[in-house]
Image 1 (tube, rainbow, N blue to C red):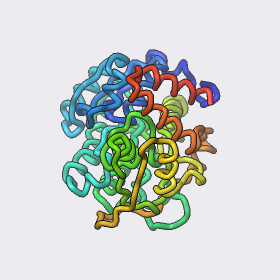
Image 2 (cartoon, helix red, strand yellow; image 1 turned 180 degrees about the horizontal axis):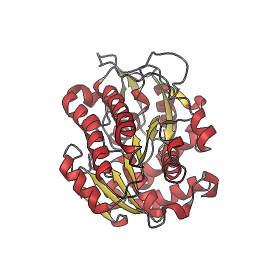
Image 3 (cartoon, rainbow, N blue to C red; image 1 turned 90 degrees about the vertical axis):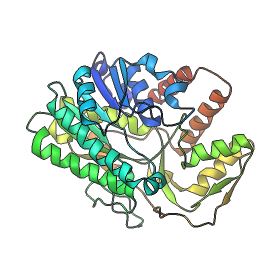
Length: 355
């Protein structure tokens, strides 16, 4: 763990509140925290997919508490946080899909913007919270389709409801930091990651889950935007950044209470077609073709600058894209073979820590 810059002792027996623990990314974070010895209290809706990471790794067995609730319900969030008495809050609960945001814009804004306000307000009323890491997205920037990676000081924006709602969450977090939380001694930061991949993601309209579903059924995957470029990274890379950031917020305070990019190296920003071509090389029955039908707007080019996290947090992306794909395929194969996915996931976390 020392190689990651994480202090194992910091997390041992520490109460941690994780929203979105029934989702893909929140589930990986909750399990890693539990392995570090933290007392993890989860708050989220029922798992959003079936199967789900939460159920396949039997995550509830590893947690101090798992509360099924809606972050749009301020009273329920406040009660759960009072009961958990957390030192650290990781906020990951969200409506995370661009295409779904076109179908349900009101729910997307209510969840991603007002849900974030509810979490911040509940933390403000708590007497135990020392640090909050609010996980937003790489898509919160005003995307100008340029070649340069976005830095934390670039303008926020968002063409679609999802991206815009996350930019709103960033603005709300900054307002709470300045108006309430800094004075109360609660340090809050936002974290913006790239396109995260890894085992246990069954969300719809995501490239790799869609590919696995099509391959398992012997179907040809329809790709909307094969030339779209994204910053791909394994889920453990940004999660390591979130853990390190939370520790710094508690131990060193306000210098770290700001926005952070946790992004892969620029060479791992690849077109969608590059990803699916390599998946086809490893997955039996893997096939794809370009879907030329009309599609809602999605950004064609997106990159993030990770130099701030490298310099100030001494964080580095440790699994490059080839390894990230290999580990994602490995997880899916073990799952299809009916193995213990808690054991498989734990082994991958251990391998990452030793990288």
